[in-house]
Length: 313
Image (cartoon, rainbow, N blue to C red; front, side):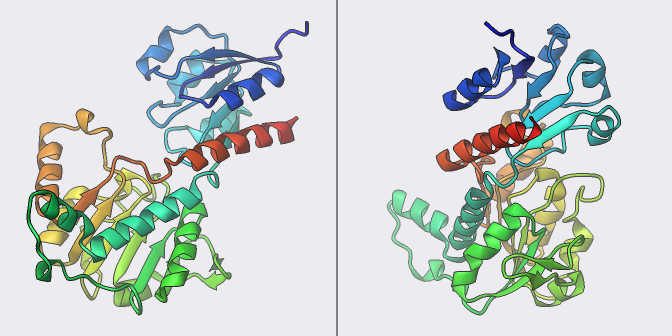
């Protein structure tokens, strides 16, 4: 029998078809989906490949310990936990699948927006508690509203596509693109976003440039109150600045699929108090980072990783 050509450490839960595909591609597999960051340094330096999750930090310390690794798999899009400069300097290839869960993120963002505009979560909870309240739950229609999508990559584009059937005025903004999908629309300047937006949705990676992108100055720049969504990364939004904007009436309501520290069990007492206060206000919806967490997205993300690896071969 031919000896395995690669030895991979799988640090996240993987569907069986993916593991079988790796075996057929001559990988020797060490499956440790529950491993956490510090656990890694108790493992031997025997791997040339690794599949990671968002909680693992691939920095200089990691790569010095695992000096043989030359291939990183990342299901999904986020690479903010990977030192990409180190990888480039040391010829370490990174394979991710940002388009695998983009449709799921677009659908989730659409669902969050409809929940906010129609008070769905609040009304459903009231009925659960024996209340039948109609007038206070009168909603807003999206038709003829102006929706700004900031960051028009895979997920942002998918959200734009969902919005296209609601007869909204779309303001796509992407600093690095002159034209954006769908339909190759021109990228709109931020000043126009500040002047016209009724709804603002963030679809940004987290890096030095986007850290606290949505800060106090950002929320103060809008000329009218907005509805705010973030389904990208928690640290692109300053949560305290968002809550301040909500209390001042600059933000009418907000939906977050991500928070600055995840999961809730890891946040400090002060931040947990902030989150609890926001949720009790009835103006904020928070879901547990599940925007790209569908069964279909799971399969697509891992299929794309296999296809990308085959292209490398």
